[in-house]
Image 1 (cartoon, rainbow, N blue to C red):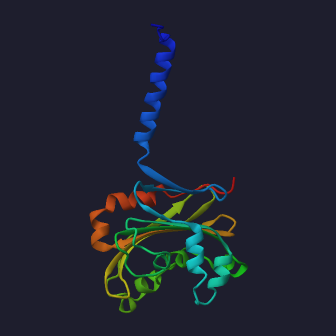
Image 2 (image 1 turned 45 degrees about the vertical axis):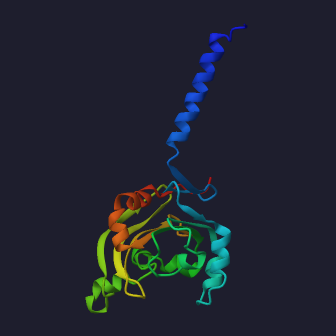
Image 3 (image 1 turned 90 degrees about the vertical axis):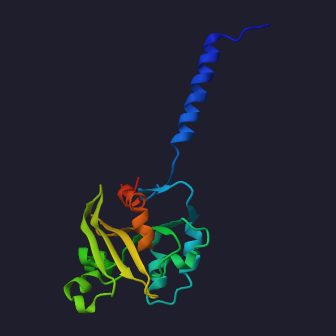
Length: 219
């Protein structure tokens, strides 16, 4: 019987070992838009809602300025723990089933560029600064857990973690990062949302998603 050279055998074993290690280490999904240099790590097994489906859902919005905002979107993507979550619900304030991650990159128009501030970034989905300034106007379950500046390679803004009551009165916790590019021409947003009881149970995993959000800019 013809013997296999030892060098070939060792090489084969080395390749197999590397492949095994690589497959074992892929415990995350990397949502990324390379053209805008945005990356976020999502736990493996979550369900993706791609850019095309989100664009289609957003195009049906009748809110003022919705069409203009959609036309300025560079990239958006969502991930959910439940396959039952639909694209339209990504844009809703209703507390989701399980958890939802939504990432968005959008160019700013001239008015946005002149008016954007850290407060407007905090107020991206609910009027946090108003609720803080006048607690009598605050949402019934509003609680600010954390709020601090985030600085990336070409952008800076705020990361705000808070709880509020959704339209049905369900307690919802949001980990929101909103950054604006240094030239004020683009906004980068990451939202991690879940019912508060779910968020508390999976806090380490969900906050790690916010930690992983990276903005490096155009290549």
